[in-house]
Structure formats: C-alpha cells, structure tokens
Length: 145
Ligand SMILES: C[S@@+](CC[C@H](N)C(=O)[O-])C[C@H]1O[C@@H](n2cnc3c(N)ncnc32)[C@H](O)[C@@H]1O
Image (cartoon, rainbow, N blue to C red; front, side):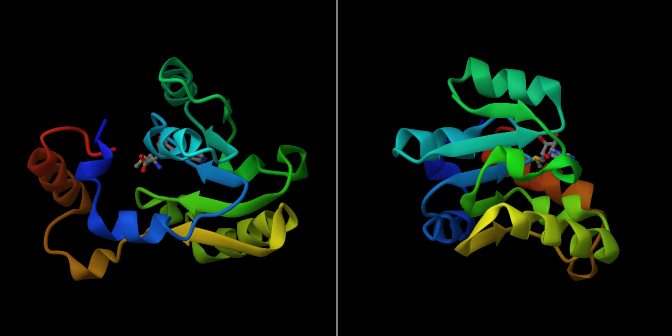
C-alpha cells in the first residue's frame, strides 16, 4: 500500500481539508483511514468488500465495516467529512443514483460537513481508464492504493 510520501499531490492537498468525524467511503485496505486515525481523527471506514475490511483491521484500522455506499444510513452516526478518494466519486454509478445517495449522505452529515471526492473524466484520457491506472501503479511500484 502506497506510503504517504508517494500519494498523489492533489490527494494530499485535498485531504488537508478533512476535519472532525470522518467517513472513508470505499476505504479499500485502509491507507487513508489509518493515516487519519494516526493523527487522532475519529475515522470510520466502509467498503463493500469483506476482504478489504479484513485488511483494514489487520492493518490496525479500529473502525471499519462492510457497508456499501448504497447502504449508508444514520446508524453510522454524524460525520463532518466524507472521503471518496481513489476515484470513489464513481461509486455513485450514474447521475440519478448520485442524487439519491448525496441526499442520503446529507442525513448523516453536520451542517458544515465537506465531501472530499476524487473522480476522473474518461473523456480526457486516451486509451482505457484501466490502462491509466496500471501506468500509475507501475510508476509507484506498488498498487497505488
Ligand atoms: C480504488 S479503491 C480506493 C481505496 C481507498 N479509498 C484509497 O484511496 O486507498 C475503491 C474501493 O471501493 C470499494 N467499493 C466498490 N464499490 C463499493 C460500494 N458500492 N460501496 C463501498 N465501497 C465500494 C472497493 O471494494 C475498493 O476497496
């Protein structure tokens, strides 16, 4: 898993805006949850993949649970920051679902909450997105996430 020094510059810049209780949506192996946890944040990672959540726990993430973005609800509590890093804005799937899920996220966020999301414009790239990801990964010499 990429070390902080190897994270992409725009990620590091965006993550500086995180504050308060933080929901890491699609937390993967927990690199971001772990980073914030070590800095004293109350961070909660969710991922649809039981294996990803297992990895999070093995790596020391205290709060990680198998939950799909489609299942988020107020039982998770109230958050001040929602993270959707690693192109996870794409987890919305399509505009209609994005609208519905953003409404849901609103129910579990404080008034001044921020969503810090990363996305990709497929029309900006030559070739396929998966080939771009592979290039990024091989540049980083690891899986990037
Ligand atoms: C590209 S990885 C990003 C991991 C992490 N955010 C990072 O930047 O290191 C995307 C993650 O989203 C998870 N995922 C996919 N669909 C999801 C869904 N519907 N709800 C929650 N997580 C999902 C995948 O299992 C995967 O771990």
